[in-house]
Image 1: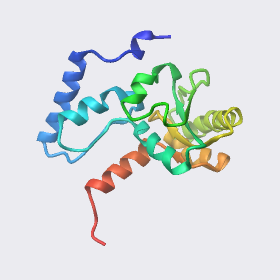
Image 2 (image 1 turned 60 degrees about the vertical axis):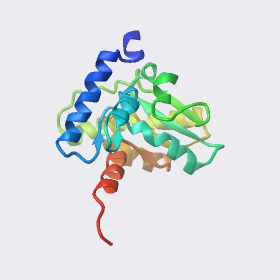
Image 3 (image 1 turned 30 degrees about the horizontal axis):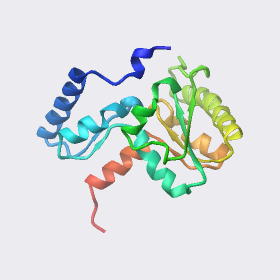
Image 4 (image 1 turned 90 degrees about the vertical axis):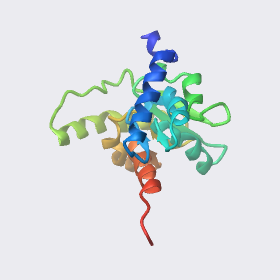
Length: 187
């Protein structure tokens, strides 16, 4: 494993990320969202640096999802590589021992599909993710919802939802939520 990727970013990196967030805010951006779920480390850094909402990781949804499924059920977090989600990095987005969850890594699944045709790529990813989600649920029958960490996974959300019968949250559900909050429509 790559132990360097598992540690907290340097202060210099945090300052650069905070400055980028401030630049976006100065340009008039009303909310910031990132697409990589592993940006958990930067949630507190960015949100404290600006006066606009920051959605740095799809995993921000986990505490909310945990509350809506009930305390006796777990959120299944599907991630590209479980080693990158440390207890410290998860705490940056509100996930701790009070949020029942399972981290399910896909590091041995052949997830990095080289197919470039969008439909063939989606099917190839579904052929990996559906069995992986089913295996996660077999191993953890108390999982009642799934949250994807990685931006590569949302094309499979519908297939995984259909196969498991569970709600599936991903970076797209997060960004839609963020957008609806900062671009309200009149009713």
